Structure formats: structure tokens, C-alpha cells
Image 1 (cartoon, rainbow, N blue to C red):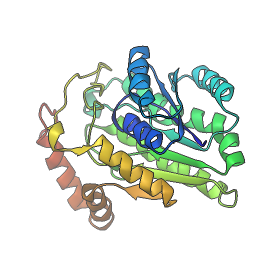
Image 2 (tube, one colour):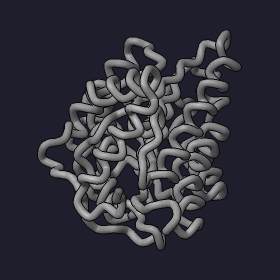
Image 3 (spheres, rainbow, N blue to C red):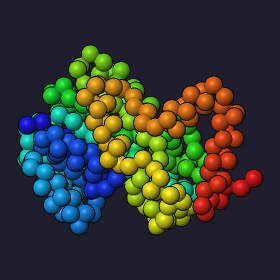
Image 4 (cartoon, one colour):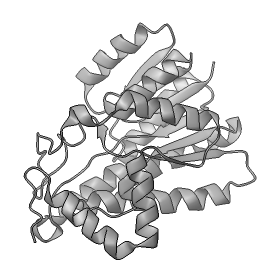
Amino acid sequence: MKTVLITGGTSGIGKALAEVFAKNKFRVIITGRDENRLRVTYEELSEMGTEIHTIKCDVSREEDVKNLYLKVHTLTDSLDILVNNAGISMRALFQELDLKVIREVMDINFWGTVYCTNYFLKDILNSKGSIIVISSGAGLRGIPARTGYSASKFALHGFFESLRTELLYKGVHILLACPGYTASNIRKSALNGKGVAQGETPLEESKLMSAERVAEKIFKAWKNKKKLLLISREVKFIRLVNFLFPSWMDRIMFNHIAREKGTALKV
């Protein structure tokens, strides 16, 4: 039985990916910071007829990731897939932002991913397995009022493109997956300028791509050994137009975010 480890697996894309891998009879190990959510997710996934494990872990803390590594190795001798999914967002203008917010976002989104990759890379090398990184359209084009979030996702692309090249002849597959807006709780937990969860979303979540659909696309891309997955037409458009017409894209992004509910972005 192959084993997948998914960080931040109790909600959104992480949970949807756990369901997809469980449906395909993987041994699934998920992490999260909330014990109640871990318990609920365990109960839901256990009904799918495969081996499920949950481990409490804050990936922004290296000591937690070290303990995660030790606990995973009490459950299995090998790891086939590491899914770096745990993440947090923020919404605030940089000029109104306490810098601790960017530090927290980078600690979770970037350093958390680096810690997990560092501890489990030997396993992935041994199994000639895969590392799946959940990035974002914000990792391809900076988004106003999301400076810290965009920075963290851009950093992931630089890190994993470098690592992928280092491992070019080692048999390791690395996939950077870039969803567009996805229906999840990430916007509700997004930090404001003072580092407090905003508790609401500026978007109509019902109109967004579902986490389940995103997870199915990521699973298919993993099976096909893709290196980069641009999940929505919106993300593909942003990447192309930003490359060809960056000044035009500045205006497009400004106008788009300026229309968001509760935005502080004004002309």
C-alpha cells in the first residue's frame, strides 16, 4: 500500500485530496493544528475503507515537523507522496500592515513547506516518489492587498523549481499546482492587517470551483507526472497576460480587487 502525507488536511483542498487518495486506496496520513477537526476528518475518511491516520502538527514549528517525521515512521517505513498543502492567507494593504502578519504567513506557507520537505526528502528519494506543492495563481502574479500571501507563493516556486532541477536525475517528481479562487475557508481565516482572522469572505463561495474538483485535477496531474498545473482558465489568463502586457495586468488586478467586498484598495 502506498502512503501519502498531506499537511493541512482537515479542510478545503487538503481534505478533498485526502478523500481522493483514500478513494484510490492509499494509506493516508493528514496533519492539522485543530484536534477536533482531525478527529472529525478521521471519522469521515475511515468510512472509505482504507488506512487513515491523523497527527497534530503546526508545520511552522520545526520541532513539530521533527515529531511528525518520527510519528510517521512508527506507521510506515516509506513515504510515496508528500503533499505540502498547509497554508494561510491575508488581506490588507502593505502600508497598513503589521509586519508580523507577513512573518506568520511566510512561517506557515513557506517555512512550513521547507521544513516538511527537508525532513521527508530522504523518504521521497528512496521511494522515487512525488512532492506535490499547493501554490496559487498568486504565486504567478502578485495580488494587491495580498503582499504576504503572494510573496510566500512566489517563494515556493523559486524553491521547488531549484529543487526539481537538483533532483533531475534522482527519479523524484515535483508538481506545483496553482488553483484559482477555490471554495474553502481560507478567506475566512485570512489575517487582517493586525494578524487577526477576518472571519468572512469577500467572495460568493458558491460560484467558485469546488475543492473536490480542484483535488481531482491535482490527482490526475500527479498521475500524469506534470510539473506545473494551472487549474483554472483565470489562472492561465493571468499568467499569459502578465507576461505579455504587465502594465495592463496591473490595471486589471487593481480593478478586480477594488471591487471586492470590504476592500481597502481605492483609487
